[in-house]
Length: 116
Image 1 (tube, one colour):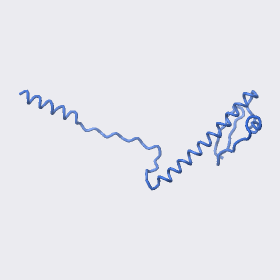
Image 2 (cartoon, one colour):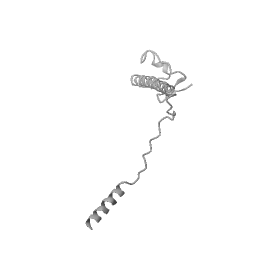
Image 3 (spheres, helix red, strand yellow):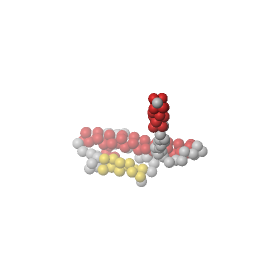
Image 4 (cartoon, helix red, strand yellow):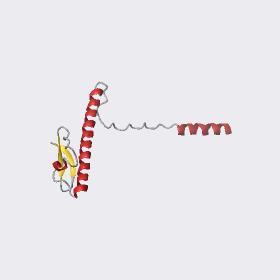
């Protein structure tokens, strides 16, 4: 009798532990480029181009924003226009990235890079 009880108990534990679980869903890809191996080089080059444009924007605006803050520290006011930063604070104003322009607010001393 105990053998049948133990056998039933073990079988019950096996069935309880073997329930079917749903597979975990994969998170959606950041880019729906399709994942086609034939277009991978083109997708990669497109991503590199976007990253380079973003990095150029960040570097240009960060350097000029720092120059604006340095001008404010020295003069006690923000420059009326970016040309005031030359030649004292910076040697020259770096050109904006291709297709972009600087949008400077002299009252707040903020600089943005916006599309032309």
